[in-house]
Length: 457
Image: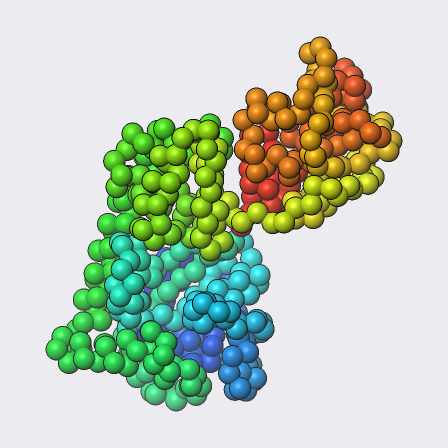
């Protein structure tokens, strides 16, 4: 058996990548059964003789081809031959009207893989230099900025672990030579010839023409992508500095008045960075300009809202909020609560009670229910006289209007006992030295001051 450095440039690159990332994580190969992923799988299988690799493979069946079942069988056979454990997942990758079939399949595939990998694991894919060039050209045709033109990074966070691309410096020709030399058997996805897909058109019609004029074009395009990535890192550093100066008073928000002290270009830079950091999709420049005009320049008493796929942007007073689209919520629903056991509130999260002493909601309560604001509720705050209108309390707490109807209200009988995350009524508060419970909602509600949901990954 040859030593890795004598196995060729592929093995050398993959070995170097694994040594850089360490051998603690499990390496998961995204294995489609095609030439590229089969080469990566085979190289890693050979390297196990020299490196302490923990290796697994995962194959995702998209159910888009009549040959999908045969491909899954092929992948299982190859993994058995290489003595590699294979996990198989099946997804529904059919695109709805207006969706990109390529994007839909990729998203479904990655979601399925994220469910399998553990904290710190490394998913490795066989993307190579030609793929990088195609991605750059595709992003150019879409009018992308430095972020899009940076194309695919060699390493990025992926769910609870990482995604690595150890072959980005290798050409498709190098991978094919390896496959032929080692007599590998791979499958050909018939959709790769379908030039209705933009990437396939670039692969079959555009890149070959460019390579006739500039034989090293894939390498130079890869260098351009690296330059754009470096530029984007610098822009992110600037945006991170700006974020620190324009953050709102509520966690995760931006101050409109502080944003307006920046130039329009810096505003858009900060907005893009803020949205990406929160895990949301970034809209087009045209949409961002609309945000600047319709939301940042709106009067303070207005509450404008803007939408794009999977994102809602809202303004309340001086602060800008980004969130996933709000689910339909019925304010008339009433939950009977076996207090203090956890209670699932549909579409909102799980209401939990943490035991404390001398504070929170009193421990010995009966006939407890959870409701939502309908109007006219009053609450008696500790150390204050009289009852206070809940609407006015929400205003004084500066709670955005769209969140108010989604804040759980705990009742004892027909009396309001607690506003979860905000206050406990004097009549139902635990006395000094007595057992009590601090209430918190965990789950899908966006984090706000006084409410502490679990982070989403």
